[in-house]
Length: 261
Image (cartoon, rainbow, N blue to C red; front, top):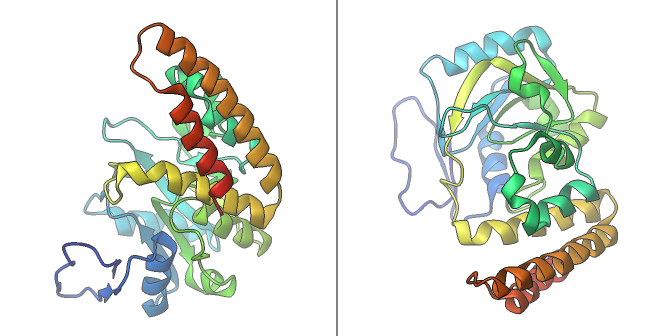
């Protein structure tokens, strides 16, 4: 158990080794600190805002064992009980710029928009294991030796995209990424972070990922074009009486895009 300098420290618990970090280094640093103390064959990574069934761990291990070595992740349910899109395609500039477009937010649940965002729709109806590009990092399990062989999570990512980067390196190392629909957890989402900071973390992580894997300037230009579209959209909304500040919103978005690194 890795406690990343939480305001209320995790209490000492029988049978649980707790790593208390002195600073909040982000998701990657917290996971790496816990992984450094791990001794088993498999490393299980879980967010702090999950609801986990009592039999979750033995069920996950049992379903994962025939597939090893591999990165595996359970089906994730949101707080309403709906299946979340917890498996994705490798990120592209199109995925990220579409996500940035404010006018499309109203259609975020439409299948065509999900595809443009890179969501893997197979997870919604899957009943057997599915090999995917990458798995959302809320809950996943990886062979500890392979995790260590690729250097663990890159701690330059404070929050977001670090699990994609890890899985790209593990994919190059020969490990498949497999979604296991027979095992489930519930993810409340955002329970361990300040909502006001999430967008900045997201953009910073996306740019950092693009700097590492290619296409950072292309991404910034695409996001800037999306900001121009947002500005026009917000101007129309303002004329209709919606309480929105088009220019200041656009300035904030540009600052996020070009200062992120």
